[in-house]
Amino acid sequence: MINVEREMEIARRMNWLGMISAVLLAVIGVLFVYSASRIVTDQPVERYYRQLMWLGIGAVAFRYVVLRDYRRISRDAWWVYGILVFMLVLVLLVGTEINGARRWLNFFGVGFQPSEFAKLATILLLARHLSRPDVDVDRWWPAIKVLLIVAVPALLVLLEPAAGTSMVLAPVAFAMMLAARVRRRILLTFVAIGLAFLTTVV
Image (cartoon, rainbow, N blue to C red; front, top):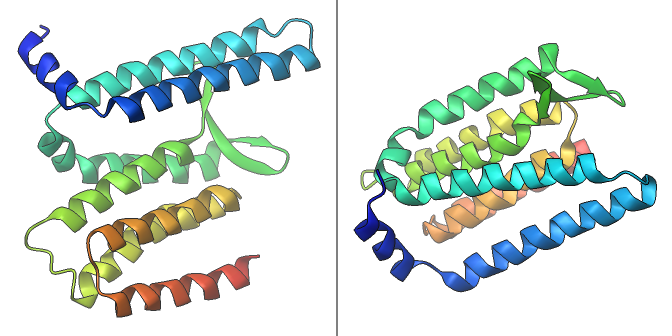
């Protein structure tokens, strides 16, 4: 049942500039897919409709998350993270191989990349970890835990291989630790580790 009062409260607190920007970017993305498909083939309808389908799924998921108590979402963070890590392992075992890379899982004819959802799951778990009142961000262990949380999906994605997707997680984790006011010495140490790792991968 729709809670009208809650939806009105959320609407008043909504960042409408960010919301409008996201909608515009989504519309532009659909137009780009249509235009690119039109150049390749005279029948771009399938890819165009598929993009619209994923846009609709995203809109439903957005509404669900907005109306859900963020504390309940936070409590589910470890479950979501664990499921996505399992899917990343599944991709390496039974994923669809395209051009020498295993990045896709197919369910009932619908393909998706778990690595994209794994990024969101990692961000959700990092937010839960760094926002806990009993976590002392001035100590090394909470920061090392951040590194471990990021390292598991990053290494699995790197094995697909999808180096670009894997490397996105590092700056996101750094930004979240910066927002959580982790000590500068710890941040600089992690940056040095990241750069050293990058030189071995590239």
